[in-house]
Amino acid sequence: MITSFSNPLIKRIKRLRQKKYRQQERVYFAEGVRIVLAAVEHQAAIETIVFSSELLTSEKAWQMIAEQRHAGIHCVDLSREVYQSISMRENAIGLGAIVSFAETEISDLKVDQESIFVSLLNVSEPGNLGTVIRIIDAVGASGLILVGPSVDPHHPTAVKASMGAVFSIPLCQLRDIDSLISWSESQAIHVVATSAHADQSYRQCEYQYPALLLLGSEREGLSDKVIRKAELTVSIPMRGSSSSLNLAVAAGILLYEMAHSSDQVK
Image (cartoon, rainbow, N blue to C red):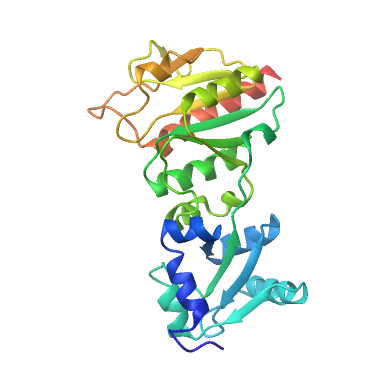
């Protein structure tokens, strides 16, 4: 059992709270029973599992640790106090893992007649990003493409908000919108943009597939230049005093409608 706060492994996990170290080492720290179990289930590249025998009570987690040890994964026990020092949670449950990055090249994305992809432009809130990843998984969409300066999808808050979906959803990153549009055209993908000023409500239009849903940043949305690149622009009607919805909420509404329409098309 590690009891020293100055242990090299403990120092390393604390460093991984910062994006620059995650980028340098190409690994991140994922925490929580459900999240680590999801990493194992989806065969993520787990480097090390850390746990605290003084905190962890989940029988499933203990079984998983035994199986991973048998498979040769490095599993390390930490004292209660040491684990709490690396935890980003208010009530640490005693299970985490160092996981290697799993990024997909956009050319490797599988596109079929029913595919629905999501692209976020300049998203800045890790909680929103993680929630959108979770929604993509929930509706059975095909992948996420981040465009431009974006919050790190391996940020602890994003990983937590994804509830493990970060391990199952193909995720790509592109520098600019032109690269995204070139790819969509090469794959005959129909691009759908969102705008508060669009004439059509998201329920009044006919979606075509495969489809790509574009969503802008939390603060600025999509620019007119980007919107003009889309085949279809839709709005979500607002009846109250609010002028816009939270990014993840908007993504959920639109994705469920598009998934429902896709089922009807079949």
